[in-house]
Image (tube, rainbow, N blue to C red; front, side):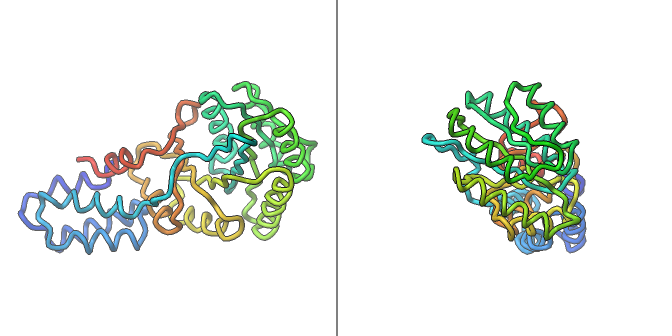
Length: 279
């Protein structure tokens, strides 16, 4: 996954040359780290000796990450509500199921609401996941009002003392204004029953700067609390995670690296940076 292995292998001189910095900048752009982070790295790397060049890069990347907590919130007195939002095709519904399974394995009682009601495949998918992992799913008829589904789910979450209510929401970005209005309505309706604690945006790690733009749109509309980054499969195109954290100051809380339930885990920033800059 290293972005810099190719460059570091060529560094035999005691100083970093202008051509080295240019090559580094191209690598950063190719890796979707974003202009701001790339600029900081280049500036901090000037006049560095090769032996402390790697440390300079790692320090700059670390400083670009959000300092906010990566822990998933939990309210011991009432169900903790988590909205899973994002664009269709990013792994949103699968991430909702994987998060539910992760929390269940942490000995939490979890309920899922299938609120992407205008996409029958999404409802069927989350129902199938629910059966597979042994977690109940609240859903409505095809085309049902998502707000009605989440209202019923919130009432059941309280009545049956669930620890978490995870809500899979719609992601039809081509109808952006309607989608944002719908997400805002879902949030308002849930909060008539229980406060929403987490709003996690699912970011496709392969989409580049377009993913950052999408995250900004959702953040402006409903206010995000964190990120789930999917499709971090070991390729060098994982820099968008750092770019998004740096731009929005939102912590990555979980990552998905494959299709199985095991390919989902809390985000370890130290390990991520080590992998990103390993020789």
